Amino acid sequence: MDLILMNGKVVTMDSSRTIAEAVAIEDGRIVKAGKDDEIFSLRSDDTRVIDLKGKMVLPGFNESHMHLLNYAYSLKKVDCSGAKSIDEIIERAKSFIKENKPKPGEWILGRGWNQILFEEKRELTRHDLDRISTEHPICFTRICEHAVAANTMAIERAGVTSKTPQPLGGHFDVDEKGEPLGMFRETARYMIYEIIPDASVEDMKAMLKDAARIAAGYGVTSIQTDDFETFASKDYQKIIKAYKELAKEGALPVRVYEQCLLPQIERLKQFLSLGYKTGQGDEYFKIGPLKLLTDGSLGARTAYLCNPYADDPSTKGISVFTQDELNELVITAHNGGMQIATHAIGDGAMYMCFEAFKKAQEQNPKEDPRFGIIHLQITDEVLLEKFKEQNVIAYAEPICLNNDLHMIEDRVGKERSKTTYNYRYLADNGVHVAISSDCPVDSLNPMKNIYVAVTRKDYEGYPEDGWLPEQRLTIDQALYGFTMGSAYASFEENVKGSIEPGKYADMVIISEDIYAINPDDIQNIKVEMTIVGGKVVFAQA
Image (tube, rainbow, N blue to C red; front, side):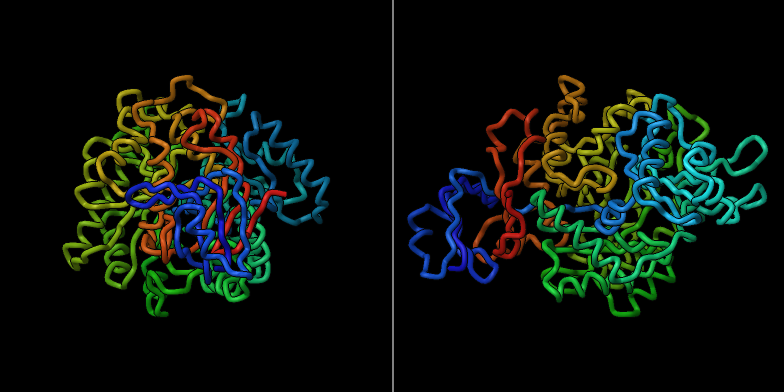
């Protein structure tokens, strides 16, 4: 054996929920999990033995949807997360400029602001960002990633004026004179993004290595990530090249399943013509599903609803595609050998997705297509049943409630909110639930996510009894969603998600017994060691 872990509490996540004491590992795979004495007897002179000292071992966490490259990119931006006022945003940005000393004309980028937290209770404008600097173009992305704020210099560089037509599938705000106010939503974001300098393959590799190391430090061993539109060029070939080179160099401490964002039919056809399809790749980098953004976000009121927003009856949000456009994309990918996973937050968008999935199966029935919907926030009773009826994967994000529980009833009203974020109902109803964070929209730390999932509280413990407490997941459901549920979402349940013979030796050792600890303390659990392919990729100093 190459490695033996012993004297621990090993949660195998197998179908019987077996608890073992030790694990034997060889050639990157699990050989056996069992009692200390039987596993210890398998050692040889070269075997490394790690005494767990009673600590708990879990299968490695599998992020079923995030943006790894975007997260990596965000580490080089102004951190706007948690800011309580526009003045705080401005001060953070000025400090960033003072510390980094960019040359006049160089871009200042930021992300993570949320007007829900601001004292002013309004979004950023170009006038706010002009207070930071008029010597630099500035673009600050909202926490949801579906809206950006730009300053005057950035808007002028983009050539956006009162005469510029609104883009399809997006919108930029204007003042009373029709001049751009600074907010760009959905597809309008790319009016700004497309003029921001791109990154080289080597830049991407460096950023990805840094971000992947952070992920490993949180016990994340697999990541399903949407990266293709991180940079203005939208050059998926460069991004695939960066990942493949890292995998070949043995420089990835996590396994990656790329969710391929290709929202234009010609780009999708080009991608397929190059021979790409779901499952292509190796143990460390694979092509995953076609990813589509069918609507926006709740915070920006661009999630597409069936009925108007309760706090703004003038809008139902933004539907990025017509039904025919969505059908064509889904059917083309389905016929081309790709799985499909769609971003849909509003109920209106979800109904469109289910219809597109149905059309694809009618035209080309497949036994196990594993269609999925990511976010699935504003559901109703009919939609909740459709997940089971059409066997669609629910990529749930409990962690989003940390922010959303403070606005959900304002956005859709108290009555409609009762059937939203109903993750417990889906899990109890036999729906395949995979859990994710949508990082950098929220924290990459799985313990934060699990805490919100099982308490239905924000990070500060509000509300005391949890929001819609009947929708709290059990500890086991949350762990399953972060391990076996996510492995199922990438067709990898036979090699990932549990600690069983033949599977990848991907595991995480944590500081506390997550089943025994007070649920309110789960977010404080630390990762002590992360193992990927039988190698220790992170260990607490």
